[in-house]
Length: 544
Image (cartoon, rainbow, N blue to C red):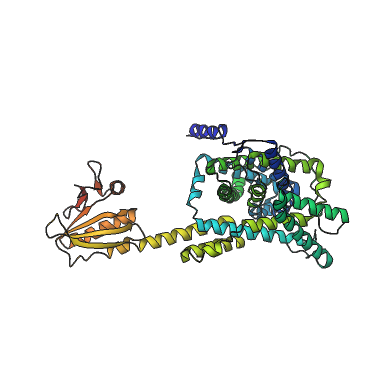
């Protein structure tokens, strides 16, 4: 088994879908677009990585190193060109309790184990289960995440250095006021206006990058007093160094880090795979879920050994990249390398960029990410789907993405089961093949949700001595269905009557055989007249 897993892993890493070449081929213009898109993303990554590091209670460089390493590795071998990964708030809010109680070294060990779990999920191809996420949940996901991105920018409207870490994230702080606040709001609006107008003038420079450049030049040229990137923290540092987490290799350590690792791995994969689907819809590309799991896991294992806080896909930065024209792995790699360049040599330049410009970029991401058509959709879809959209949106904002998606899937599944449970009904008629027999033609799926309704379809006392139950328009799904059939047959047996089952499909036969209710001598053909008889003498479903 380990050899098979290793072979699967090696096969996936050896032949990833690199997609270095865009569909229209590389050109000087394409390379320029990819590099400028990567630069725009890198600029937007800086305040996010620093802010999320503060949320987790670690040094800003821990967040920046994570953004660089996770971004670089997932750009190289990830499942979807165009996606951007890095340190995220969804993971940071889980990490803060671990760091507060046990220290940053336990965080590094947790990130390594988190990555291993994600690699295993990729090798086992568990990423395909993201297909089970219904569309209403996806709408709620993007709406909730847009609101979360918007709320995350509110911290930039507070006086730098006044927020405190409460052990559950950063809170408090004094709001900007007076001329400084009005200037900040004006610059945010100007950034958004430039981003909106720029594509109508030229697409030589990505609109977000143009917005950042115009506002930064205005602030630096006139010496405006507004918060800048350097007010958050210094981003200057060296290359990340290999570092084995300093934690005891003991069972107690595993007991501490395993729960956090499982939660972080689940949140990271859910956010990454949903972002993968969203980017896929925008770029017209599909697949790559298992490859993305392996890429995220590999990135987190490496990050944990190089002093990073781990990460996953970032929907905001991914939207910036895609809308700026980034379509290949070059943009993601460029973003990571530009970020490293900022840390090593360009920190003095980056630290003077006004936060207002970056907030304006993220506000445009919010506008582009929010599914505004969902308001119209909710008036047309079933009430349950509309409820799921609102529910997932609210839970994403109030709790976190993973909880919201799980809640949304559960509610959607329950609604589906309930709707199918109400579909079960029967049409009765006299049999054309068995004289004096009554036929119940069952319509609708027979499963745990409809088994009780199925039992209520039959009039045992009033029925003739022979009853035929025809499943041509039905499907026997699970053990509850088998038990329901058995219970009905026993009622007829107790009344001294005979039950015959018709048109059971092959998969129904397999279920009945597994349950020990049916002995099949040959493959069943669901189209022939009589599938099985129920013997009132033995109480066993037998082959016919």
